[in-house]
Length: 197
Image (cartoon, rainbow, N blue to C red; front, side, top):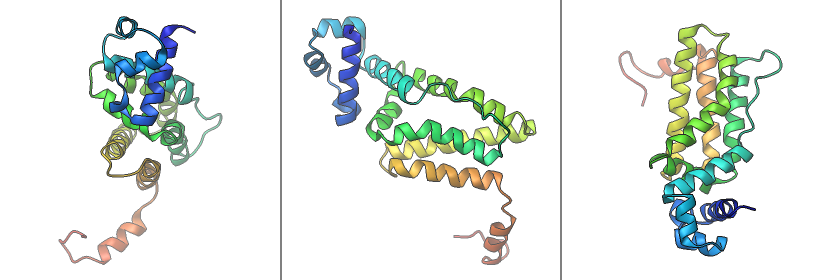
């Protein structure tokens, strides 16, 4: 085992037990049984170390590349298949998800989002290619923003990790279902020109 592999293993343990703030370089060196100099030579910054550890974890647990469905599937089913693939490993390890969000704000963190996007982009492209292009673009923008919003709410402590997927499920349903009946019920409970509370 390379020293970098042991360092990454220790960092993942620390992230799981203490989150982003739980990763202290001296503690990493001690637990990995390497010098602090070795840690710094391998990973020049603390965030670089955390990003590298999360990239490896994602490659094992949330990658291998999401394949398109073998047969055509309804848009709702396909979108939820993609979201489940992406989120289920993270929701089983909430401290790692919170660290993933935090690490993205630091130098080098953009690689984490790029890695996740690369894993799901081929399957989502196949799914949305059958849609009218402007509709597909709108769906992609709304769902990307909804997913980011829910994940950030989780990272800020506003919701639990187990609330992310149901929130996305409701959003996907509203975007892909015929919502005339629920919309009509809302309008009937308000007066003209007044928005529902």
